[in-house]
Structures are given as structure tokens and as C-alpha cells.
Length: 150
Image (cartoon, rainbow, N blue to C red):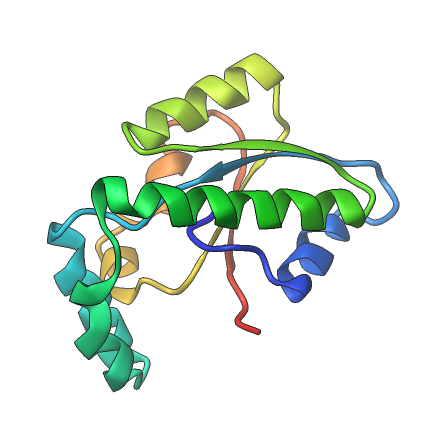
């Protein structure tokens, strides 16, 4: 699961996690959350010293407006994974992302889940971040990685 396009560093990292073993990816793109998440993201930005980002949190597209940018981010990420020599498919997930993740794991018989997100300190502290929640739901190991910026 990702929240923004994979950077070249992210792609290199996830495609080399298992050495020379062939891997394939089913990427679930989670668009930015609803208005209730704005406060948590702003607190995270302040905690990381990103005061300008905290002030802009309410300016990002939400809900339906976030669908187009999420689809573009997903396509960029899939192309980057394929260019790195991996099989990759994906979809934007808006409703019940953990249920969708569980269904994808079950259908594909996935070996593990990688949650690649920016740090979310408040959610992590309360174990409400995607990786913590997925560990209780999907039935396979969940690896949490922090996304890079280019």
C-alpha cells in the first residue's frame, strides 16, 4: 500500500528486498484521507519540522478530487516497478482499504505486505497507522517502510 508515487529510491529498495528472487507487486494506492485526517497530518508535519506543510494540509485534494492524482501516482509507480523488471498491477482503493488488502492477499496468495508511507507519528504512537492495522487483518507478515522524497 502506498500514499504517493514511488520514488526511484523506493523502487530500488522494494525490488531488492529479496535479493535476486523474482518478485511481483500488487500496488494499492490509498488517496489522502478525509477531513478528519488533516489534523493528524498537520501534527505529523509539525513533529518533523515541516511547518509549511502543516499549514497547507487543508489545501490538498480530498475525497473524489483526490482520485485523479491518486490514479496518476499509481500509474507512475507501476511503470517504475515494471521498468525495474518486476510484474506490477494495482488499483486505487478508497473504501475499506484494509478489507481490500485482505482480499488481495487471499486472492493472490501473497507472501507479505509492504506498507510504504510517510511517517505518521501520531497514528503510529496509537497503532492506528496502516501497517499496525494490517498486521491484525491480513494474515501474512507486514513490512512497514518509510517513503522517500525526490
